[in-house]
Each structure stands twice: as structure tokens, then as C-alpha cells.
Image 1 (cartoon, rainbow, N blue to C red):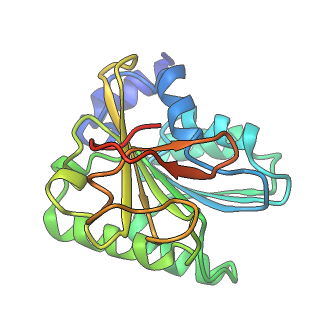
Image 2: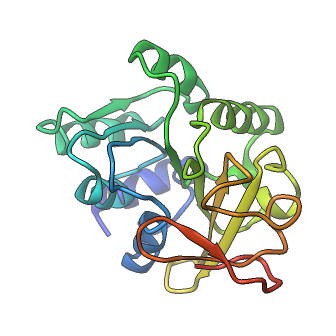
Length: 224
């Protein structure tokens, strides 16, 4: 854990939301939800000091784009320095609800993935609805396109906050402080991701390593 991360947590715990950066196990589970075999437009909400970001950058296609939204000004400057030599990456010290405007300014109608570790469970309800609606709106109408969250609770799925997404898959990551749920909400119901009921709540889908998912017909909350 870096001193910067710890300092920012104690300065603003509700914004940083976790006392420790993501573990390697959690980072792998999040990044495994994305298919980097082709150029993608990727967005990350609340990258902090860049734990998840570094793995995304390591895996992503040479022609991909990555947009980072970080409200903490000091962490934002840290990200700008860290990725200054990578033209694929832009850092934005603004509200992630402005994602549609940022993409439009870049001449991009859609993005392929949105990754988020921001604390939705303690967020103002109106702001939560705004971010979720805008995220859904800008995701590409493609089977792979997904909103991927890692959270202490899975309330975005269990309480229906993301029922406007066609399909969802969740798994538990115990080896993190604290343990997290990793959930992918997909834009499309059909295609490679399959479906089984509202938001995929009765389907378990497994990835075969290249981003293609197959339904195994079991009941449950979904796992990879």
C-alpha cells in the first residue's frame, strides 16, 4: 500500500472508499471480464492510484483508448504523471456522470467497457441514477459491452438499480481487503453473453478465455 493511497483515504474515506488498494486476485477478476483482442474504448471510474488501471493498460490493444475519471485532485495528478507517456490514456478530474460529454468531445459515440470501484452504496440516490443511466446510454450496442463493478456489496444487482441492463454476471473475490463482489452488467441480452431471465439472475456463465461466454444451465447468481 502506498503512502499516497493511505493519506487520501484518511483525508476523504467516503470518496476513496477502501482502506487498501485492490489485491492481485481482485485485479485479475476485473480484467478477465474484458476482451482485449481488438481495439476498445475503456472507461474507469475512480481509479485511485491506478492498481486496476495498470493491469488494463498492460492488457489492452495498442489502438485502444482509456478514459480515467478521478475526483481526488492529488490522485488525479498522480495518474497524469504515471501515464504521461501513453497517448492512449486521458485523465479527467471531473464527475464521471459527464462521461457522455467527454466521449462526444473525443468524437466517440460509445465505449466498450466501464470499470468502476466507486462506492455506489453510499452515494446520493439521484447521483447514482444519473451515473447508471449515462453509463448504460454510452455503452456500445455490442454483446461484449459491459459495466464492470467491484464493490463490498452487490446492491446494484440485488436491489434492481441496474435492471435496465439486459444481463448480469457476479462472482465473489474473498482474497481482497475487504472482500468484493465483481459484477458485469451487459448492454445486450443476446449474442455471446446469452441470457436467462431478468438481468441474468438465474444464469451461470463462464468465460472460455477469449471473452465468449456460454450458458451452463445451472441456477445461481452467476460466476466465471
